[in-house]
Image (tube, rainbow, N blue to C red; front, top):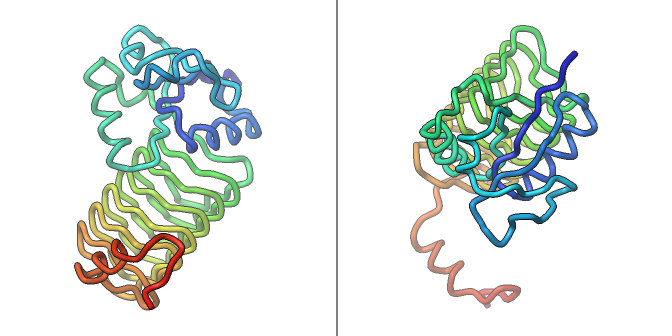
Length: 227
C-alpha cells in the first residue's frame, strides 16, 4: 500500500503526539510541519522539520493533518487552507493501530484517533475531530466536526456531541444526552443532562460554572487556598 505524504499543520504538542502515533502505525509518510510562527521555522518537531508558514500549502502537492489542540483553531486553519486551494479530500485521517473502530462506525477526513480509543458500533465521527488516548464512544454516538476528546473520556450510547465541543480528561457522559456546539465539559466531570451550546460545566453531576465561581478562582493565588 502506498503511504500518503503528509504535512502536519501547527507545531503543537498534539502534532508531536500525532507524529509519534503515525510512525508507530506506519500509515502515512510525514514530510514536515507548517506553522505561522517564524521563530519555529527550521526547527524540529518530533524529528519533523518546520518548513515555514501555512501559505506554503498553496505550493504543496502533499496531504495535510491539522494539529491545533482547540477545535475552533482547527476550524480556522482548515478554512484558511481551503482558501489556499486545499480541497477536502487532501486531509488525511489517522487511526492508531491499537484503536478499535466497530461495525458501522465512520470517521471523517482530518480526524485523529490516538492509542487505545474505542468506537463500539455505529458511531459517526465528523471531520477534524481529535480523540486523545483511551477515549470510548459507544453505540450510535454522533460527533460533529472539530470536537475534541481529552484522554480517558467515556460517552454512553446515543449521545450527540456538537461542533467544536471540548470534553476534558476522564469526563463521562450519560446515554441519550447532548453536548452543544462549543460547549466545554471539565475534566473528571459527569454529565447527566444536556449541556447547552457555549456553556462550561464541571463537577459530579456536572453543572454550569457561574460568574461568582470564576471570580473566586481568579482571586485565589495559584497553589493557595480560599481560607
